[in-house]
Amino acid sequence: MRRRAFATAALLALLLLAGCGPGDVGESKVLVEGDPASGRRIIARLDCGACHAIPGVRPSRGRVGPSLEGFGRRGYIAGQFPNRPPVLVRWVSAAPEMDPRTAMPGFALTEREARDIASYLYTLR
Image (cartoon, rainbow, N blue to C red; front, side, top):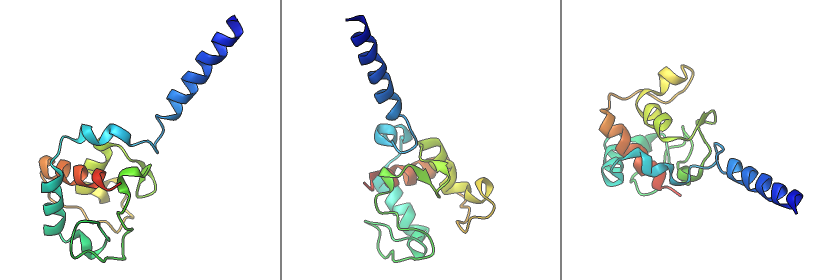
């Protein structure tokens, strides 16, 4: 009986830990505290669609960067950084500081604008 309880507890712990990996953005989008509608407008204003295909933003047929369709379910940003709100907020405004080899430009964004953009990107499921 004791063995079974231990095995159940161990299995539960493993399941909980499995849900914490980089691929689980889940409810983390809520932690951005941004306005998705404002983020969509900022993305359009910055013409991010020149490089990315972005659902909900017209025109956006870019092929230089990856499509952002399903971004909210992705585990990594640019294939190397965990897809977590503070990382994404920094990435959208200062990508070259994070990875000097990236083709993604840096943008002079306020913290609020970066949060709004991140919030919109997390709606792309």
